[in-house]
Length: 501
Figure 1 (spheres, rainbow, N blue to C red):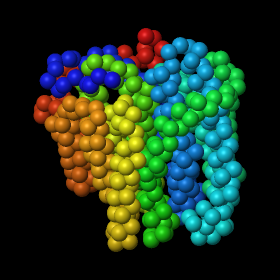
Figure 2: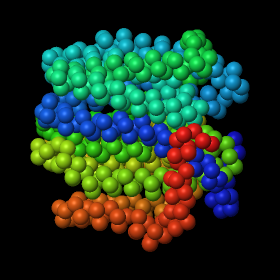
Figure 3: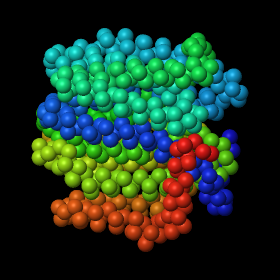
């Protein structure tokens, strides 16, 4: 593979590829917006129906659910993208890879389900110190099993850049799952088990819809293909430790907070973190879904390195807007939605929101390692950041409470992005625009601090937010022509959503 062009070569990146990346990200975001918005709506419901302590228990259960899902996934979607997008040459080869992936996914999911059943009791004792919540831990299994099966049709839709269909499926599941959970938790009063039961039923419906999508596209049954399975697993398995370490960066602090501060503190922390989590649904996750398929196309271009650098700058500038909005207006959201018992959680929101922004930076910085098949480095960089996170949590949470976990999250994600970027530059140099990247983050974080620590007035927080785009233009980080292009792109987005090319 030829080396990327040097930084001095005057090759303008094709804007149409960046516009498509933005459009796909926006459409993917529809499903995330629905899911996260409904999740936020459910937070006050959980607070009233479960109480702060039981909400903390639910947060720990969701943490365990995310870990088991990550392990069961085995990072196979990335291996599928490599085979389907980068190696298959004909429609027949792509259908064969899709059927083989379905067979591998089914086998791995069944094996994981059996293993989880054996480990459920020791896992319950480890997390809660008693077997009384064994039922909750067992109810995680069907959710993980069904969600892992649904990864195949979802990955197929992403690979084919059918962002609208992907978003529709995610949107439907979010609505249907929320309705079920509300029924099970409120009138039926099933509590935390009701949340997991509702999630399982909605996951089952999603699997049925995903199966229909595969059948319509010529894949009616899984295929045994040992050569493909071995090829995919060799690529994906080194990514699993990185994913688990990423989980440690994201949510493992719930266990430490629960051990030292109790489940009430977990509930307050998780509530604030959940509002910051909207950043993941609105920006980082949709962008990641589009980026996972797009960067393989970018890397094949002579100007690929420059295009990736432009994508990074564009991501940081655009992502800083919702991160700042969540940070400064999170105070009002906590007071409106949750009430005084969760007031302290408002200080967690900025660390969660900007932590996810830095995770998006890491995802783009890691592109060179994926392109050059150097994924063996990802477990090392992610594990290094995860170890730092765990060490800070274990030493600082007993002294400073859950706010230490918030600081640890932001610092660890920053370390992750830095280590990964330095490593990737050795294999695939990219001319990152450091002045714009650092300038944007500095402005956003500074205005966040001013909005949160300044006068406790909505008008002041609004001023801090509106100052951000002005500061970007005045400082020269964003040119006026870029603003005009962004407005034009936004005006054309409805046509994109309707499927107009």
